[in-house]
Structure formats: C-alpha cells, structure tokens
Length: 258
Ligand SMILES: C[S@@+](CC[C@H](N)C(=O)[O-])C[C@H]1O[C@@H](n2cnc3c(N)ncnc32)[C@H](O)[C@@H]1O
Image (cartoon, rainbow, N blue to C red; front, side, top):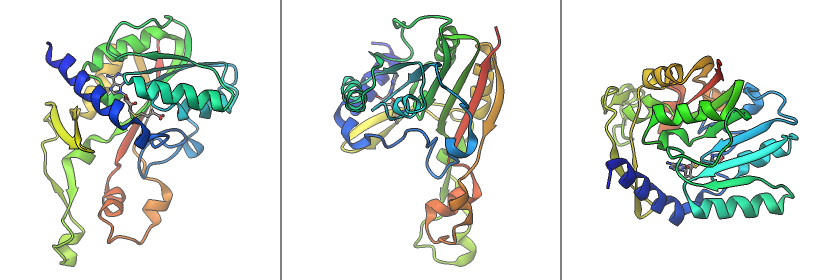
C-alpha cells in the first residue's frame, strides 16, 4: 500500500470512530479556534443562488450556514462514512438537500468540472496527502473567477508552544518556545481520543506556491486572532497567551484565474 493510502486509511478510521464528538465543532461562521469569524470577515459575501462545494464537509454545519443564506446548490465531500451519515441527517432535519459524496479529496470523484461559484474547506485542507493535486482538483471544479476559501491550523501553532505553567516566573511565563522546525513538513502520527491521526505541518509558502501552481490568485490571507481573545486579560491561560502573540489558524481566499 502507498504511504499516502495508509495515512488516509488511518485518518478515516479516526473520523468514523469520532464523528459524533466533533458534531458542528469546526464550522462556519468559525474559521478556527480564537480566530476572526465569517461574521467579521465577510469573505463569502452574498451566496444566494450560488453553487457551493464543501471539501471535508464533516457534519455539514457549514453547508447549513450557506443554505440559511439561500445558497443555490449544496455539495459536500468527506472521507468518513459516519460524517456523511451525520451530514445527511442534519441537513434533512433542517429541511435542506445536498449532494454528499463519501471519498478522499485527493481522489477522482464524481464532481462536475467548471461548475461551482465557491469551493471551500473549514479545517479540512490540511488533511490532504497531496496538496498540489488537491488544489488542482479544486480549481477544476470551479468556474472561471470562482472563489476558493479555506482555513487550517496556522503553521506556527504547531511549531510554538507556551511555557509550561509550573514555570511560574513572570518573565518566563510570557514567553513562547519554538519546539519544532518551521521547515519540517514530514508526516507525524498523533494519538487522539484513544485512536491516532496522521498529519503534516506545511509552510505558508507551500500553500501559496500550490495555489499559484493550480492557477489561483490570492485575494486575501487572514492571520487574525479574534477581538475577545486579543482584549482578554486572562493571560494566565496558556492558549489565550499564545493566541495573543500569534494566529492559531490561517485562512486564504483565492480566485481561479482562467
Ligand atoms: C475538522 S473536520 C471538518 C469539519 C467541517 N468542515 C465542518 O464545517 O463541520 C475534518 C474533516 O475532514 C475529513 N477528512 C480527513 N481527511 C480527509 C480526506 N483525505 N479527504 C476528505 N475528507 C477528509 C474528516 O473525515 C473530517 O470530517
């Protein structure tokens, strides 16, 4: 088996076992933890009548967000059968229908080409084992001038950690530690919820160059901790302290050029 297929299999096992505990957890209007939301950023604008494709749609809460705003057509792709089941049930309960496809974003899927106004992914793209190939597929699904929006962990979030709270000295407490090389894009296995996931941490330039290679022009890149966290005085919370010093997530808005 190819290394990439093994990674996809491990991640699929995790998501099938843990879909319920992530129900609606990472979905629009949120782009990420302690991060500016769609309500502030307005990256999508008016989606009424638009054709939307959600890559790694999870439980479909982001699709419902667009359906509530009168999107014209809803499509979603996800690797996990359990997520697709949850998505279908959630949309049906809310009176919406979508074309939901169970499959890996890296593979050839039965999705129309040159068709969508928006393709987007909220905390999904980083799971791909083939960033360039995935961006090329996404470009092929979009119409000319179609918009691709995605959010993911900020690269620095993995590289930097807070000083452990047992180090009480004020001077040390306000520091962050660089614990992993920014240049290291190798895959790592991470134990989670009694199971495991396999991911890698890509440089910002890797995203930028893969977007350019797939024929996208970047309209916006957002690195913005939310206002509440920035203004918070709870600086004894390591996560808040970290989010006050660097973005925990990042978000790109790109347009397909031709
Ligand atoms: C954090 S969740 C995304 C939640 C979703 N965006 C939402 O709005 O609710 C990540 C999703 O990525 C899916 N996933 C992981 N690897 C994938 C792959 N290679 N292809 C497609 N989906 C994948 C998982 O099954 C999971 O549902």
